[in-house]
Amino acid sequence: MTNARSRAGYFPAREQRPGTTRTLLSETDGSLVKRTVLPGGLRVITEHVPGVRSASFGVWAGVGSRDETVAMAGSAHFLEHLLFKGTPTREALEISSAIEAVGGDLNAFTTKEYTCYYARVLDQDLPLAIDIICDIANNALIRKADVEQERHVILEEIAMRDDDQADSAHELFAEAMFGDHDLGRPILGTVDTIKAARAASIQRFYAKHYKPHKLVVAVAGNVDHATVVRQVKRAFAHVLDGESLPSERRAMRAANSIGHGTRVLTRKTEQAHLIWGVPGLARDDQRRYAVGVLNAVLGGGMSSRLFQEVREKRGMAYSVYSFLSGFADCGQVGVYVGTQPANIDEVLQVVKRTIADVIANGITADELDRGKGQIKGGMVLGLEDTGARMTRIAKAELVTGELPSIDEALRRIDAVTLADVAAVARDLFTQSPTLAIVGPFRSAARFEASLTSRTV
Image (cartoon, rainbow, N blue to C red):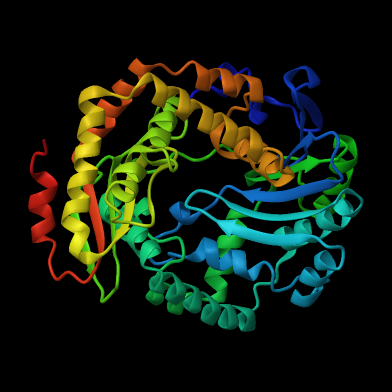
């Protein structure tokens, strides 16, 4: 990763002495963001949001499905479930009821590269949220009985995902593009790996990855940094050993051999689900603002090209959109369409022609302005929520290594030119594509020929 000191002036936590506090953004940047590094390498980062009476608190662990072995697939997500099952001082019902009794929200999620446990509460109830979430992050029991119970719950979750054909298409697309690379495996694991999971192995996974120097505590809202630090330090007191420095994301096994081609999952469905895509950009690639504009123009809303071509002009889909995914070392750019099976060949050709036109001719000045406006509006309006602000500062600390001010982020978007978008479109869309289809089709052969054929 690029030296974070050179990126938007961000000062990496590893270069900050434990026990000290640093201001990352000031009021003149439009937001007051501070970070304290505690003994043991635990990072506490807060953003004071004037005029709100809520606070969002999260403990973020730098571990996701990419950190699992093949045999342990699904362990990060399994562990997410288990942390809510009890600690030495709280049973599961006490954990949830305490937050709900004050009208708060409590939840968690697991991704391919990190896991988050969070609560959103009234500002006066922030000490309660800190106490509970730090308790489950530090002191989960991981009992055999809880593992057996949650095993059934997760198998139900896998079944629910498999019943959602659009979700199945996204899983198939990742598998087709990344193969046996860790990015190609489902976050939930498989039925076989979940059935084989044991409490002892999950406990070892927990002990290895949930150490203070691998965690980030993030808070946004009507908060005082020094007060939050004192409360977090008290909650983590028994595990702050004073030795470790904050951990940087370990180098991942690069997805150099990204695959392509066609995969079909045969299912008797009323609708066919198609995902066409190519390798994208790593999350710290400086072209990410240009590809964000490209994504907005291509399939980011009702005025986008794909929405107009597939839905408005032809009426061949209800849901059609493009998407981006960025990881530490690579990414994805894709198009999803849900359509009647009889329409799938024509829909695929429309997608290909739309992409081909962007490669050949770029986008228009009006589309550039609309794409920029869509991204800027979505970003700023999203940050009206303290949960979104908490997520932003946590991901800056844990995964991206930079925290531009809102004004700086807006300037970067505004700086994108037609040439920038045209260049990134050519770079990405001239790669060999991957196609994933879920529906009542027996073979991928018919689609392979269509995928490689030229369009006019």
